[in-house]
Image (cartoon, rainbow, N blue to C red):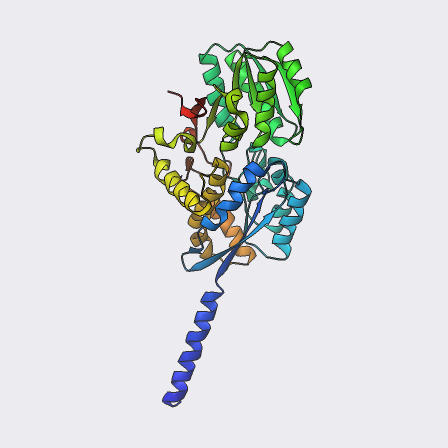
Length: 383
């Protein structure tokens, strides 16, 4: 072979290698509720997508973002499209708990890991063969609930009213609270439900007031968390008000105004970042995310956006490990990605530190929560 042919062969080999590298791509689907009743949750999640890592190791990452309009049926359609048409290697989303519960079967059947930025622990507990494909990027209900119940007991709450959404989020919270309050000597004297799309909860609020609880806990995510509390305020309820981490968004303060003053919740350090010591490992990560989001969108993000950002951090750590066992776009890669996510150890995120295991697909501990109150129209750390 003469030198010309050798050079040509090397050029072709180099071009082939470059082409192979260019196509070494991971595809990640993102399903958020950027419109509809859950939009206050979904909008910051959608707006976070451009901040996710576009290159991980020697792989490029493409994100395909879809809006399910807060409709569980549309979530199913979106997930099916991402799996069958786009051939994604992982899915981040959906935004709502009912939406996420409704697609677990499909991601499990397809063998595609899903990182769910939702409130309810029911997406990962109890662990099943299907749920082993799901990882949760928010604190499990029991971690938040224990902090709330401990605080209630310390402040002499003896009777409690509950009002929550009639969906997996509210239902799991009612279950968790029943067990914890019983151990703490707190009696649940009223438990009411409402739909996320409801415009009035007056009937439910009147029943709660009639039971005369020392305190009321609202168990609802996003915008729907405001209505029960403002309704109770308008009807003259004078007891203590508590919220879950589902209320941890700027819209809660804006929509609630003076009617939510004094509310207590357990939630992410992001709400009170300025009061968090620099020694907290998540402060730096959260600060970097907030600054990047604000630069891109002109406003600070709700904590729900951080749940998507953390999903990106988890994938950034897991993808290089999965690549050792398979090529992106193959079942082997997706299975290895699932295994790698399950082995996450001491990964610092925006809201806490992740330690996953075969039985724990959320991975948060007490470092993933702070006790917070609403004071003078803003979030303040309870000390």
